[in-house]
Image 1 (cartoon, rainbow, N blue to C red):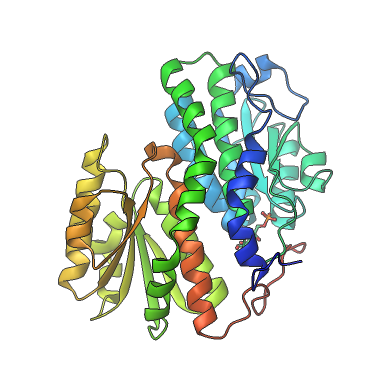
Image 2: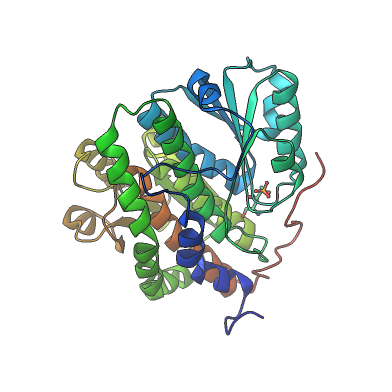
Length: 369
Ligand code: M6R
């Protein structure tokens, strides 16, 4: 049942190109419009939205963080992301023109469900993204877009995460379309790139051998840090969560610009720092900034592993080790850059003798608050 792999997680990592392709299939009609599964909201309801809140937990929350960048850029609607467990306790400002996007693989996470119920009590509209047809969160939502990852057995989320990203991009593009697209060219170019993503994810997976070797070399360390900027920041958080969850190791993700405000003092000789480097094309300012962050940590003795775009010679010069991913528009890059971090965590945890599919103290679905 593991399809020839040692663990369900390895199998699920390899299923990602297919899972993302399945999630996109049939969702873009002949006229290039995005189609949601269940919508108890009119186009006018979507046009009336003036604020988006994304609520989720764990890895799903990281998908939400990436989505904030996409939604605000494509739609110009203000978007906040909040941990579902915090949302209702701080009395957020919600009304009929607020769209709450709830992301939950299982559709049963109690914290997320409670956030959905709170949003509905306050008359907000709720759109959910879930992998489980007929689960509670989609049932209680006004609109639903299902991810089609298939059953994810490993506790550590991999293919569910990538399909959540794909679905979230579709939601962002749907909002942009329904509201009249300011960036029509950009939106259709992004759709083309989304459709091309599964092939690129497959390419990343084919190239994972050096990542495994790197992970084994880091197995003696007592901490690993992850840094990123823009959408690379949530990817850094996700890389750290995977490592904590699987290897029981101190791992933390930081917005790279925050290093000098405290965390840089964690760096000792040999501390591995995984840097998510954006494309050197286009937004090169972002690229320059992370290269200087790499220089800062290297000056303190860090061993830098850069996840960068293929052919990025600058990153190759500054990092100790380079993991290349195919070129992609900045906002879609997490579909590619998250994958080596999944493998890195799994391999490092394997070297430490951990139970990859069933880490201690964790359940696949958290149905208590
Ligand atoms: O089913 P959900 O998406 O609501 O689950 C949320 C989190 O419990 C989940 O993503 C968790 O963080 C994963 N085990 C991380 O790999």
